[in-house]
Image (cartoon, rainbow, N blue to C red; front, side, top):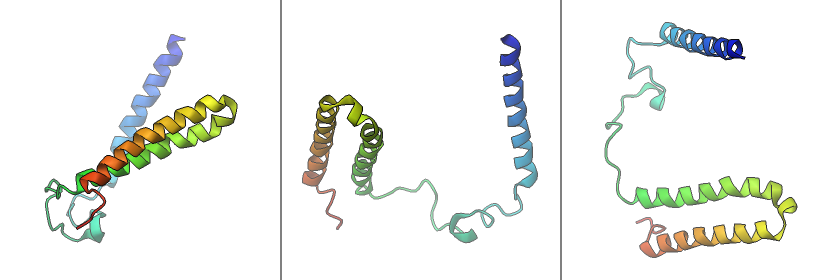
Length: 114
């Protein structure tokens, strides 16, 4: 059993080393900004860590709420027939909690874009 673990560790470390070497051999280092895939090699107009307007943060929170909802609804839909009414009740409680968050965001004006 220990030889299997040691061989898997050796193979994974060897894989990491090989991938690092392939990356170093194939990378373009002459002009990294122009060779980057961002906007087909155009020069960036602002720094990547520049500040965003504060209205984007609540919009991001609302997007994550809907995204997380879908994350939980797909596996639930697969097993709801097997679990029965309890699963339906739990999903409606979960959707109710998300609805409270969306109503709060609506009251705060997240959906007003101007």
